[in-house]
Length: 247
Image (cartoon, rainbow, N blue to C red):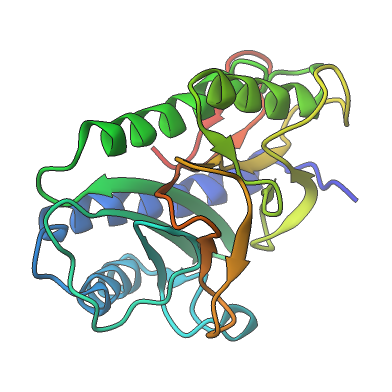
């Protein structure tokens, strides 16, 4: 069941979204060769707590950290640890924060030092695919028009869409209806209504689409070991332009 938010609930989500956006700004200067993902996790956790919020991911279904840190061929759900970032890596960081009972959720992929042109293009296309899809996040449009537009943009650029993970509704719960795949048929799916809150999150592979779950039960990697990038924002459907809560 899709839950339509009140204006008060959206105000609460905006506060959570602002903290998520702030977390990325705090992390940026530390994303460089030699830092461990555990250090990034600690910085993010301390910032979120300092803002009167809690990390959405910590202990969520048993997840042991405050951020997901997914390096190179890791698509999503990488567990922070003692791995040090290296020059030329790319890292996807997924952040969630809950404040006053409402969640914000976003992800970004960052370059570690100088990266290859191919890796940078993957990051750029992944980010832009979100904004291409966002053009259809409007009152009265169909949900899968967002999905199809993301898919078309990614595939036109020669990359693959991850198909077994998707975006989602968000609010009092980190994951709510509807599911938002990053592929689909234009003009199909639920009709978008005012004050629907959605976490749209393209996950894009440089190589082929298939993935597998690591032995830790969390990290998801590309089956062909190719690079993967991730970009996500929490948004709200309005009377006009969609409003991004996590920027």
